[in-house]
Amino acid sequence: MSLEDDARLAATLVRDAAALAGRMRRDGLQLDYKTSVSDVVTAADRAAEELVTGRLRADRPGDAVLGEEHGAVATSSTGRSWVVDPVDGTYNFVNDLPWWCSAVGLRDTDDLLLGAVHDPLADHTYVGGPSLPSTCDGRPLAPLEDRPLGELGVATYLHPPFLEGEVGAAWRRAAAGAAALRWLGSMSMDQVGVATGRIGLVFQHSVAPWDELPGGAIIRGAGGVTRHVQVAGKDWYVAGPPTAVAEVCARLRDQ
Figure 1 (cartoon, rainbow, N blue to C red):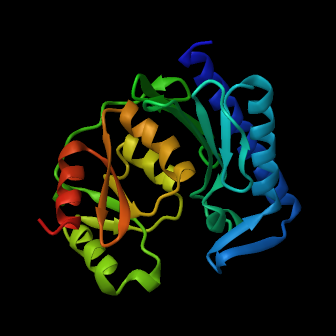
Figure 2: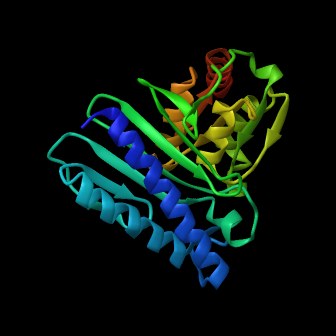
Figure 3: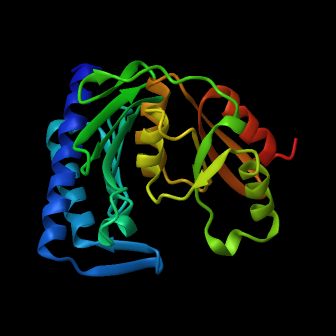
């Protein structure tokens, strides 16, 4: 079993998960709330995750699996673990906004290995990792151009209660250096946007592994970098071109 074999499996999983979720949305969905009115989940999220985790348990029985909706569903005897986000951008998904996807990532005890993201609106599948040059539908992505923050549009998010206080101040310092800001609602899609040059950089605090790893792998496979920085009691995740990432980290620290 090679990394290329894992990449092919990951691409199939995200395509099938997105197709299932799309069919269920067309048939009608019941909406449930998790932590807030914008933090939602549907039967499609759960069914698509069960599809992916079931196949991983069958095809990669030694690997751990961590899903957003069901938590850990398998333990690892190989040192490898998968993260699964069956519908990333559920609020967009249920409101018929196009910025959502299905995503999986794979890591071992040393590093991130690969990520796969399927964009159902464009019907594109992105795969890549630090040792696996990123592709769209099998075609190589252009290398990411290193650019400063002031030239880039940035995708970000800050839950409104955090707009004040130290967290909000850190966010404003970083955001103020960007050319433009976009709050789009799907971290994996935002990171695919970075890897393809449509978005300059992403940053946000308290990013879950299933939101970070799939797209982060694709950014790294296109020549970008990912970093974490601890500021105002939060873990901030920053991903994009090296120069701009360093600027955001410095601004978050007020340096």
